[in-house]
Length: 422
Image (tube, rainbow, N blue to C red; front, top):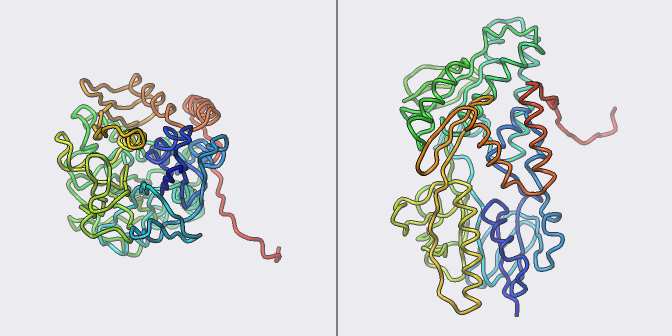
């Protein structure tokens, strides 16, 4: 009998687990995801800033595994796990399993601030990125029409909460949009009223990275005109006014939230298996604590058994990729009656792009910046993309857009059903 592996979540962890088992006929694999496509989160901010199309970083699951007979796809959202009878409940039906793998990832953490949750703009998925793109373009159009200086300033101000890689990359991209595009295409707008604020509660940007990366990001963003506020956090967002922890306020229609994540809620797991940040506690083999035949991988899991990472692994794509491959190898070892191999993270470094031709790269033994780092960033981000067409198309688009400074996809698209009223 084939063992049925049920995987919930088609991100880096889930996809790499499937890729490693897709030709092994001892397993029947079902992927469950609320979307019908895999996407590449590290580049989502480029979709949000109209730099690349969503299709450049997305790929349909059914097409991806169309030639693998032991892989099926089920579109649906997880409602509850039922460990007692080895089933899960989704909004589109119930499914049984021999092995359940939870790879749902995370969602934005608003730290209990209800107004921020309701009105800030997160950027965790394609839908949110496209919504943000529409929002920014619509506010620019409104600013172009508005004759009231105070209103125009509020419309043009952009506040980014979170000084990690996503916040830094987004701030740099938006600053360059203002420099190369807004000045030319929005002549009605008084750009001296525009400000991009990058806010972080920590004393540095890119806090997990090297001192070189932190200082380079700070200096380059300052040069681009970004207003960087450190050692301060967002405390509320009321009537288009961002309220900061130091008592100051910023008037803006656009608060972009990249400030933190929390694990997605998974109902049905034992309370003891849920740890800090709502992450699922797993042993050294990614098996969920106090369960049988249930595993968790990627950002959703918290593994405390590896000596080098006593507080858990960083929530990075490389961790998810490596965990997916390791768990696949262990499933094969289980079938072969062999000893399992615990997960050991191989840190390959981290990187962030700051502006055109300027990035920072931290490798295990060295750090560098500038044009070489920028080329490294481009190359590294193309490799994991799913689909040959995606890689080629993105590479061509990147080089064309970086040379011309003129992406042409600034389209305000808000699909709605035609009711027949014209």
